[in-house]
Each structure stands twice: as C-alpha cells, then as structure tokens.
Amino acid sequence: MKRRTKRARRWAVAALWAAVILGICLVWLWWALAVPVGNGPAQRIEITRGISARFVGRRMAERGLVRSGAAFALAAVCRGKWTGVREGVYDINPAMNAIQILKRLERGLTATEKVTIPEGFAAWQIAGILEEKGLAGAEEFMQLAQNGDMFKTAFPKPAKLEGYLFPDTYLVPMRPGAASTLISMMLARFQNVVWEGLLRRQPPAGLSLHQLVTLASLVEGEAKVDEERPIIAGVLLNRLRLGKELECDASIQYILGPQRKSRLLWSDTRLDSPYNTYLHAGLPPGPIDNPGRASIEASLHPANTPYLYYVASDNGRHIFSRTLEEHQRAVRQVRSK
Image (cartoon, rainbow, N blue to C red; front, side, top):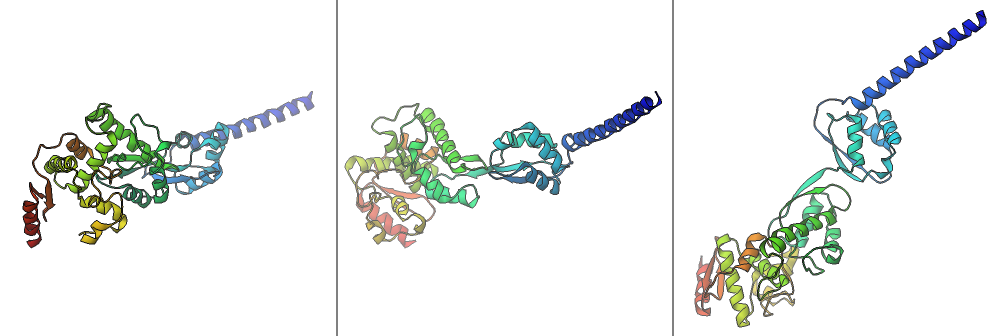
C-alpha cells in the first residue's frame, strides 16, 4: 500500500509539474502570438518564392515586429497555409499581433505603391515610371503593352495598347505581375470613363473608336491650354476633310521617342515613318500617346472653326490661321520673339 501511495504521489507531482509547464508554455505562446509588440512605424517585409516561415519569423523578431520568431513559425505550420503565401512586399505594423500579421500574409494583402500617370505619356514613359518605382522592368511593361490580346475588355482594342492606357493615379500592389496588374487597371479605367461613360458603348458618328483615340492623342500632344483643345481638334478635322497632311509636331516627337527634342528641325519632319504626319495625309496608324479625358472630350465635341493652321507661341498658347499666308505671318511673328 505504501509503495502504491508513493508511486501515486510521484505521478501526481509529475502531472502537476507537467500541467504547470504546459500552462507556462501556453501562456508564453499566447503572449508571443496574441500580444502585439507595441507602437511604431510600419515596416516592409519582402516575401520571395520558397522562403520559410522560420526565416521570416526570425527576421521580423529581429526588427521588433513579433515577439518570437519561433512562435510565429509554429503558428504558420499549424495553420497549414504558408505554402500558399503570395510573393510580394508587405507593410507590417508592430501594433498588429503575430496572428494578424500571419493572416495578412496568407491573404496576400501586399503593400501598394501610388503610381501617377500624367496625360499624354507614351507607353515607354509609363514603363520608365514603373521601373523607377521598382514595380516592374520597363521591358516587361512594353512587351505586355504591345500584346493587348492578353487582356479582356468590353471595348474593341488593337494589340498595341498605346492610347488606351488611361492616365490617372493608381494604387498598384507590390508583387510579381505589377505591370500586368497596372495595365488591367488602366484598361478598366478607360472602359469606365470613355467607353461606358463618354461614348455609352457606341463610337461617335464618322469615326471608329480607334480613330477617335488617335485623334485625341494628337490633340493631347499638341495642346497645352485646355480651352484650345476643341479648337485644335477642329483644325485637325478640317485638314482631314480636305485631305491635307496634319503636320503635328507631336507625331514627330513620338517617332523620336526617348530622343525627343525641345525644338524640332526641318530634317526631323522628313523622318521615314507611317507616324510622320508631315509626310502622310490622314491620321497616323494609331495613337501617339495616352490622352486624358479633356482631349477625348474635345475630339468628341470639336469646335466649329474656320481655321486650318496653328503655331505654338512661347507661352504655350497657339495662334490660329485660316490661310497659309496668315499662318506664315504668324510663324514669323513667333520666331521674331
């Protein structure tokens, strides 16, 4: 009886100690996972393909974002979702506890980068913005922008997406595929603002959607003052009706691309390109930039004007003329200043 009693006591003591240790472990685990580290600025953590929860947990512990890297890794394994965590850059706030951080990673809630695309930027300039912000390579963006069949839209579009990448400010997720994501967002914005908004899913009379966007891109490239956009659109349409070359400097700048100039030379207007509106009558094969709403509206509702010519003055405005003689006088006037 005494032996049994002693054995029972030993088991009881052992069980008590086990319960105490287990309790301490559970309290520690709760503290490590459920209690945030504290306040402070958010920090960015990059998740790459194949990275382990243990490595990420240790890195966050070193940076004061979680209380225990081991506890974070244990929770990640127990939840069984770590292998599905999306690559990308994540904003982690120390006011979040470890479980909240883990859920953010599992849901793929990556950080976003604000990207502003100005009106009149060409695709190569947009590509430069993305590369500068570290979201995607310029070459990757350009390849996608010339392969429009990859993107589904409700409006008809060419393979080359120049003109349809609607300028605006976008919040782009910081993860692989950012270039494709931005293009999808820009096309969706074009669909919302232009196709469904301004056009109500119907091209204007006398112009196809592609012709309208091409005309608007010329207006965008030529105009510097909003109130002149409808007048410039009217001038270009007048010249189109008469079969005259449009002679838009903006089309020459498009041909030059990154080598564009502050002042064009006569020799530049002789460049051999279907986009050269000094050599070829009619609209160029496609848009020369990505026009904003104002230029598209001006092309939809051009001014009823008698003008056939214009020349830019040094203040950004234009002098409009009815005849070639008037235009030549205006050119001499501008050059004399």
